[in-house]
Image 1: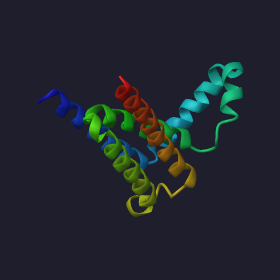
Image 2: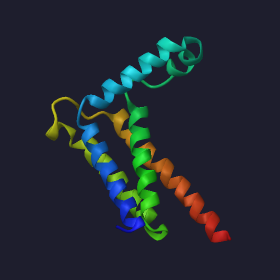
Image 3: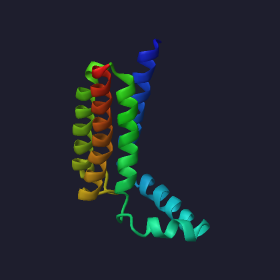
Image 4: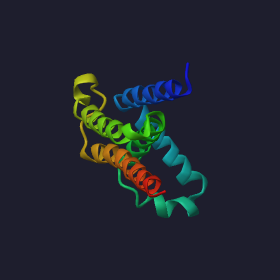
Length: 137
């Protein structure tokens, strides 16, 4: 398998895994446990930050889909990065909107949708900046 094909397979596996994770209650359980552990272990350092984070798991959504976006941007050719990330953006919206069709454990949430979109859009903006910098060289 070629190096670029391996990257695509890894990116697709990450997206499929993220989709499955978003349609289960496992992600929120893990994330809640991580937050509780951080608050319990080093209260003085974490309380200020974690008390000001939004409720729910929107930050987890942003991290998961941002990671998928990074892997996808790394997997495709530079000329296809924008298109691939826009498709991923559309996929994240689809995943959030059709959650009730696939699971009774999760419901549609605007904050989760915003987290999904922010994760992909941050990578898209960074990819555009990198593309502009390379074009100037």
